[in-house]
View 1 (cartoon, chains in turn green, yellow):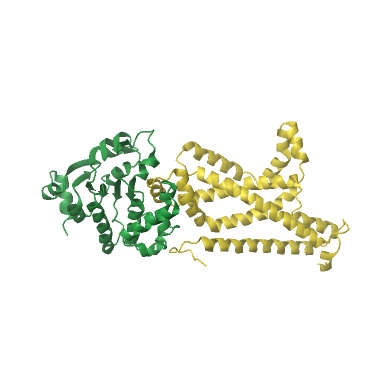
View 2 (tube, rainbow over the protein chains, first blue to last red):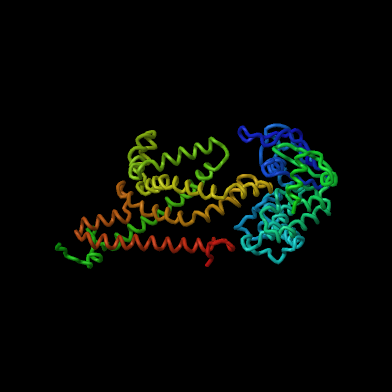
Length: 242
Length: 244
């Protein structure tokens, strides 16, 4: 579904991604973890062309992301993305947030976009908040709306870029629960997160990055039982201490 | 100082024999409003386009916007009006030039265009600032959903940017209205021009300028009140902006 081949990216002289290769199969949940500044977010943002990369190839559902001739808006419409800071549109109500791209990108009419939106709000437990504005919701609620907004496009895959990092601890679980249920439904997911409990429970594979390199790419079970690299061992011991 | 106050002069007939002075002032006010509003609408459209250009990733677009802004805000309004009115018609092919010179209400059209070009870079800079204050997250979220860049601007960035810059846009609108007074130099009979005319014919300078000062203040207050309504109706619930 998502395939990275020797992807390299530089910010000026700084080499953010060093020949990264990995893949996410259909229906698979892959967690990307690693210390901050390791390139995780950059890696995931390359998958829908939000961040350009200089070398290598990424194909999503058979479409090459880096190709100049690729219709990026069309590709992005098929890949949902959830951001660390939610990025709901503050001037639109919750339901209007869910409708916008359905109407403007997919060309759905208002009634069916609303219907689809309400069904998804129901799913994330926020149907009662449909006419509120994002600023009137808690962080956890906003992130659930953001997930619903991405799902409204019927994506073939979902990218999560640290979806719980900006949340208060008591709100993290409500978001992770939604993500867990998505995974259970067979959604293809690539998730950058520090939530190791979620990774252990939900992920099929774990990709561990450090300093722009993919250091480990292995099954979840193997990663938590016996990481191969010293760097991953150190990372896990730091993050799992408490 | 010895001065003969005579408020009755307002209702005395002006030299044309059938219009009281107060009507001259009011017709001046009318031209002020019409010129200011037309110039503002044009400046708002031009300024929005240029402001957006300056936020695009393309270097050419950015540079084009930069040149436009620095050119039109670097030259005094009065000079710009003179160039549009006196110089431009002579630079054009003779037929076009004489067509422009014979235009009815020529000073009005020239004032609108000159004032719009003078005001637009100031609008552009505010639009640019508004968009740039949004950081990158909103644009990335909009693009990630499959919206094209024009759609992202149309539905997300501009509605937010305009809300942010509404208070300063109001100031700009007031400036635009008041700057119409410079157009008296190219013969537009707006409020200040009519005031001076009244003063010259009647010698009642204080009455003339008292009334026109009052009219300017009332006009500005009306704009401020109108913009307050716009601000309130555009306020976003759940933010610090107060609705109602």
